[in-house]
Length: 73
Image (cartoon, rainbow, N blue to C red; front, side, top):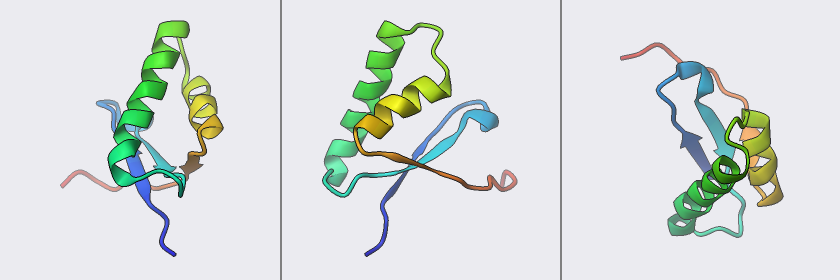
C-alpha cells in the first residue's frame, strides 16, 4: 500500500513540512483536519513553534516525513 502524503506549505522554505496522512482519513477530510489543528494551536499558543503543531498532528495520527527540498524551477 502506498502512503498518502500532504505538504504543509510556507512562504519560508525552511518551514515547509511533509506529513504522512493517517490511513483512517479520507482525502477530502485531510485538509479540514490539518487546518483545524493549526487553528487550535494558533488560538491557544500565539507564539507556537513547529513542535507544538506537530504534537497536535501526531495526536491525530499524522507523522512527519523527512524530505529534501529541491531548487526552484
